[in-house]
Image (cartoon, rainbow, N blue to C red; front, top):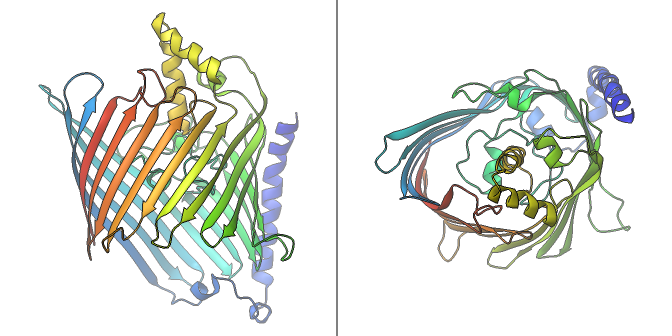
Length: 437
């Protein structure tokens, strides 16, 4: 009963939070704010009407090699738009959208078309005072400090409509936000955020230009996040973030994000979430309720050399995923004609952007201006510790004044039913040209 009491309590808390937020904002005298030095104070002094456009068009050509059959030829044209308009003192409108026009030519078959428009963000923001903000609309809120897997990114499920790169940064950016009402209060050493995201539809809609509210707003959800810098002298410069998230018919989940500088070149981070929940297999197959307290964790180190080469090593754990024995049993079912449970589990896991099994290791390298100015090199590998399958990805990107030239390569290796070996494409590559307007 605790989860339902907390869920019923949250709208009251949120209403009280916003009521206090707005009453304080309207009653605050300007003279009382002169001593504040928050980062947003400069933006508050901006002219009443300021526009900020960022847009580009991108073309991609490549090939992919299926597990069976000959290679496929792939083509894509993408139009990316980000717009911010400050139309009155304290008011701004934000819109972010991406259109992907995909074509795939299979051997001896007609070209397959898949056009997908992703409305990433569309919201209004009000900043009555430098330390107070309120937002309403579709907002992307990618919580988490880890690089490859984010247990506290509670709004990532079903949010990706079009995958143009497996780079985690691309997956976080090129996804749909959730429609919500969000309030934030800032102070010198921290902040508090409260948001409420209502149910607006029940089922996802894969239509090319559908806003797909059923994917992002299929249930009522809420979240509270608190960040507070720890006092100097106790530990180093640390500002932990605490999160509590709830959804209809589900127990609240707690989360924590923590980073610290070990030395001038090394950053350590820890991301955790936990709470009572059903296993992924139970949710994917609509099985019996097996709720228990389950933990998710991502922890790692990032080391940066004098030449700006950054190396990240991350350990990832998902307590709601199948253990080694369960994963083997699910895979063995395919050999005995029971492939449906495996397919349902994998589809659900991929839509939720979860780990398929309990443990993985993530490696990432990034080298800006690598050996040549304006040349950026990136490499990533994911290793599943249960079946030892791997995902490998490489990118070389060269920046000109208004143009990016890039070459990407990806390989999925492992047994046919393994985490990454089950991917439809064994390997793929693509060359990209991006023009910034």
